Amino acid sequence: MTTTRTAVVTGAARGIGAGVAKRLAEDGFAVAVIDLDEAACKPVVEQIEAAGGKALAVGLDVSDEQAVQAGVARIAEGLGAPAVLVNNAGVIRDNLLFKMSAADWDTVMAVHLRGSFLMTRAVQGYMTEAGWGRIVNLSSTSALGNRGQANYAAAKAGIQGFTKTLALELGRFGVTANAIAPGFIETEMTAETARRIGMDFEDFKRAAASQIPVARTGKPEDIAHAVSFFAGEGAGFVSGQVLYVAGGPKA
Ligand code: NAD
Image (cartoon, rainbow, N blue to C red; front, side):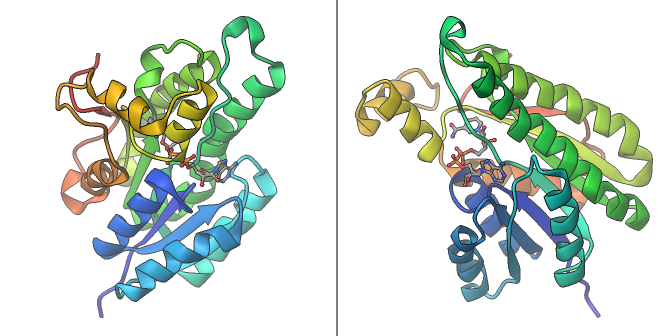
């Protein structure tokens, strides 16, 4: 009997998370599609099922401790013990520092940092018990500093320290942890930035592409490909790394 491993992807109703969920399903994982609104996860689940895969829609807020515990238990019961976790859920609350509210600081920290912590803590027991696990956390090129994103840059740099610590603590149990730091990816998040600065999205993408060595902006599939590598059987000796997927070098 072949057993299907279960992958959990947060923020997977759209954008990068949806791309990752579909790719991991193609790779043979049963996929838990987590997002705030369960109904919004359904189209991704239906696409996975239509392609012959197995998936489950789970509505929860990753920053809610009880909801995370209950959601992960439901996934383990309904799909199988989580073997892969992709901490992808994210929000932006951009503003220059002097205009940034404490609420906007807290929201960004809650989703990216507290959310990744709670999700990882909830799934790690299944992974260590199985002696196999893959954790992939979404950082960003903004971790290197980005004007108007003091909250987001701090959270995404924090994700890198979190990832390296997971690699140190969980390695002996066959669990790897790596971070992917995307550059400009075409999603609702970058469309929102364009709206905020009053720019047409196509013009915004063109301007971004002119600064990118491969001369184009990224797509969710570009990130999904990197996640697929880290989640794979063969990547067991790669841990604690930060991979910039940005169409060119970043330091
Ligand atoms: P997106 O806004 O299109 O999707 C994010 C998803 O996360 C949404 O479906 C949203 O509902 C969900 N989400 C938000 N808060 C949540 C919560 N508390 N609990 C559960 N789900 C929640 O964004 P995206 O561009 O697909 O970004 C995905 C990840 O990649 C984020 O972590 C983002 O910071 C990171 N990232 C994106 C880019 C980019 O250019 N788009 C670049 C670097 C990093």
